[in-house]
Image 1: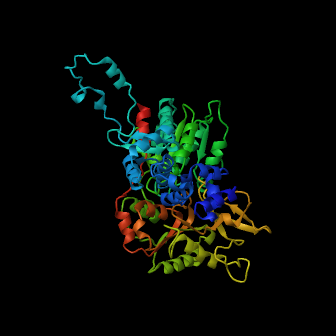
Image 2: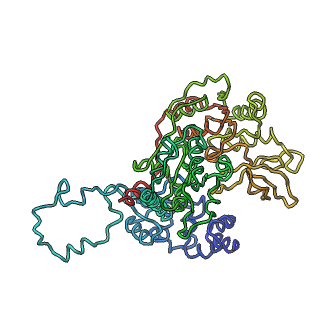
Image 3: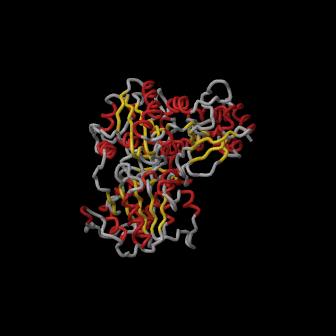
Length: 576
């Protein structure tokens, strides 16, 4: 299998060493797939169209053509997958046209229509058609001068002519069918739940109690660092006391564990017993950290809720959005048709005041005699790493009373002199040097006592920190991840996990957090990023600050880029 792919790569002038990576991405039939379509190589992570073109030229010789349908299809799918990695479920057709022109495709619209006909990519109007278009004249009035003497056959044909999917007024969005169908499923499920709800008796006099009594879908925007929100926990207790069936789910293992006994993760939810119609047998499904749901996970949850039941989504829209594509919570709130409640904005301490200020675009002064929030300046990234290790190993355990095992270190990025990689190396040297099997520590070596994470993140549970308990003779490490049972894992599948990136930390909170802000990469800092970082600590946050004025500028700047999605339009269409 790998050997066959290696021969294909080598014959076309590509590195044969890529073969295992190609097989892992394309599957056991990778050789046959590449033999029939050399641009299938674009399905391998890290491969760009230029590299796929080089391989295709080597494989096809003079038969290579810029307008080859296989090439155009692969480039369009590559563009959509790249957009999905940035959080978009769709991209504008004009952007795809421009990209195809850049790659010397002669007639982009003709190529796009052929791809749309295959069904792997779907097209939508970026802006729903104006209601005025339903009428025949200005202000929606019919044209009274029409005498009805037109050509019947021509009019009939025009009425039933297939519309041009690439010519909608207001622009066109293109989406992979998986994401387009997921957003449509979410929209249809929301409309179904809103239209089949039966009134409940009110279990209390709070806004959330009243909303659940009469509404099928409710959104709850939690306060800074409030997870699980106290209001959610209170209403769940009331509904259960009234004899209703309730399930609570979190999109990350860490979040599930914070909810306590009885809560489930996405994987457990998928395995729960269903009724004859495929839905769960319950009256209320509560999803915490709902802003972390991508469209695929959200569709599975929404479709599982039966008619007449309630769906309560709680999340904090001020932080970073889901790692996967979509912005389900925010899109649903933006429809204006779904009951949305906001937690009372009453910061009850310096941690909450800091997060609240960042959410509003300002950095409040830090005056905290109880030292729940501490700001430590650093001149360089290297100094920031030193300060961080000092805080975790000594200062926080001694002055705050929180053990090093309960401290989470977070940084905006993985790379750089004060990125998560450098921080992990420094923290291992201080906390658990080990020997790496020799007389001196080996970079990246896994030792008993190390804090680790999986090298590949499982989207159904997020990042889970674990501790190495034993090293087996066959080289595997016995790791306890969170509250799970010990399991043996090959060391190649592990990474040190004392420090996480901001993205890796989504859904993860600890009693204390050390936030490291280097100057390197500061141009990518955003308000949502800063908010996410400072809300990782429950009782204490130390901020090692080497970013200079970039921090205040990032917090003050208006959020710039919004994800491109189709959910709002899909909801409008489903609601009629």
